[in-house]
Length: 208
Image 1: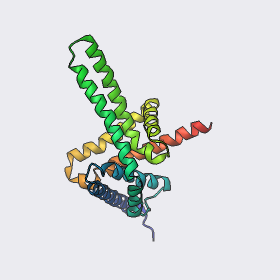
Image 2 (image 1 turned 45 degrees about the vertical axis):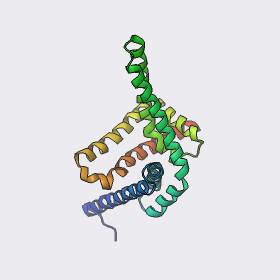
Image 3 (image 1 turned 90 degrees about the vertical axis):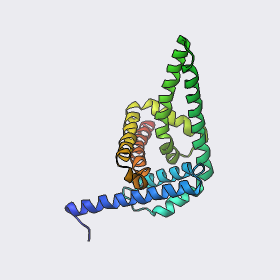
Image 4 (image 1 turned 135 degrees about the horizontal axis):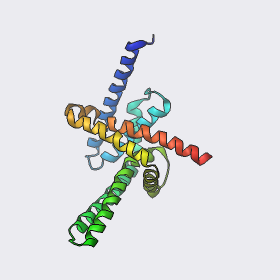
């Protein structure tokens, strides 16, 4: 018998919280299984893939452990390659920024500002990196290119994505006890949800 009213709402929110917590524990477990350096990216991809399935199905009745482990195994090598390409890009931008900041001239200032702007674009694109990866079947650099193009051509959604990252992150900082249970999943949920909405709008425009 289905619960209604406030009891039904309480049950749904409680069920959602439990599944987010379980997903987060799977995410942490996947990171540890991959000895952190090899586990972070496939585990994060698997987490976003599960949330994508939740949002597309309209409910959370997905075999969570099975779907997570399947995605983790299937995407292990490709996700690591993808993630470390993003890291290399970020390191290059950061090193260039530090280099030009150390040059006491107008050109140093101008190039520092240039690489700072590139860094902002990079971070905005990074917010879309995992949603784009689990949504589309593309070649490696097409994922990166599309993440960049989507972030730059949709500034409002880029701001919403930044807020979707910031508020759960801020909550975790203020309540550290939540980190083991929601540190990843509570951030991934708004990022994937906002991205799916944007992807739908982009697909509609492409069909028109």
